[in-house]
Image (cartoon, rainbow over all chains, first blue to last red; front, side, top):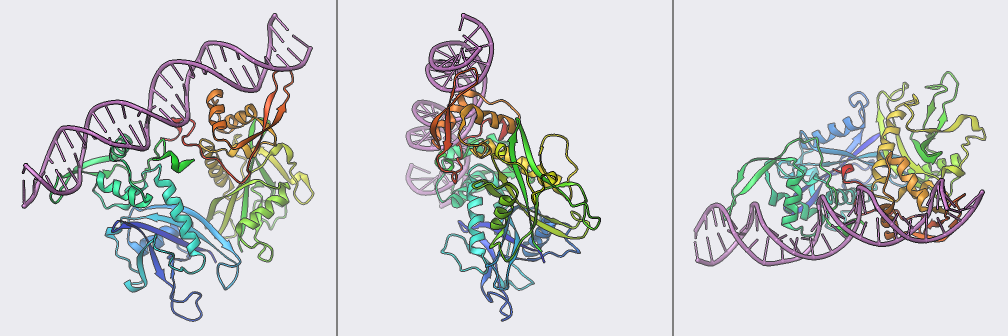
Length: 226
Length: 226
DNA sequence: TGAATAGTGTCTATGAGACACTATTTG
DNA sequence: CAAATAGTGTCTCATAGACACTATTCA
């Protein structure tokens, strides 16, 4: 039996959050009631491959149409599940969280966004470990890619995008350099203006091609990469 | 049943080569006689996790003590094996090829180094696809890491290391920039001198810490990364 | 000496970092 | 006008790229 698990990230309320599901309370299930990464068995009749399975589960959990989805890796071993040796294939998704209300089988109580940086949530299986790897991968890639654009509902402004970078990286980013670098990469289209409340409105943007992730020629800070 | 496959690279005779194994000839086995990535089932009694399994298989195939070994990803789907839906966890290794004579069960005839760039070898299963992904990952990482040091027997000289980069990348690299960047990263120790045949001897180096992969702050060529 | 390869120095281009500055909105 | 946030300009620094130059070996 093959399983696929998902690490679904978003930035909500200025915090990096992950979508978790509650394990069933039945006594014959491992880790009853604990939070866990959403996932489950491959449906060999419906899923042609692992990516299709991940896409199906992601849509089922969030309804998102064109998310960012990549494979994170796979974990397997003797001790991760009390029932014995097991392995799972893990995918990594970025969604515009403000638009997603967690649902699982129509019951919202057993799925929720939880902030990543609060001390570990005591997740089921080896999911603390997997979540740690996913956060590390996200932070690393955010240094030199346009991934945070997938975390915002469109259209968005450059200051909003900059704040998203800052939340994920946990440090401030220089505005001027950020704007120069982002606009020079030429992957955003202007689509009007978004008003501020008491201040100057900002230009609104949309990704030109959601399938294209931009890689910048250098990381944000040399400190981060050596 | 969980399987683990290995993509074992080296640079031999100025070419990037991969260690392949021949499928058994029995008629009840899929792809009889074709070349395939070495691998096989996890031994749940001996392998505590996937990495341990990969390490065991690598040692069995090559005898290498301290190779570079990382997870490449996992592949699963309906059509990769004629016997039905299957999935495999794939690891990626770099070994000093000049020191390794392929062996498999004591019989050298069914394992061999084959150059990666010759037109595809018609590998079994989806192994052409996996090998393509491994080569892409290697080429990408070589742009900004010290990975090629794992492909040379120690001690080695900087010109040898530079040639290894050039073979993998398929293009020439500027000597001066290469030396500056490599030595500035301060991960090599001088261990004497290696004589040339008719020319000036070169300083010999050894990795200071085989567990430490150096990441350079920029790629070799900006063209490659944007 | 010449052939061959090892190793150095110098100049330029690029893009990040820091930070001061200007622009446009509401009240 | 002030407050607040959006957006620009300028200077410095690190490092890749190009390429000419010097150094050391053997026959």
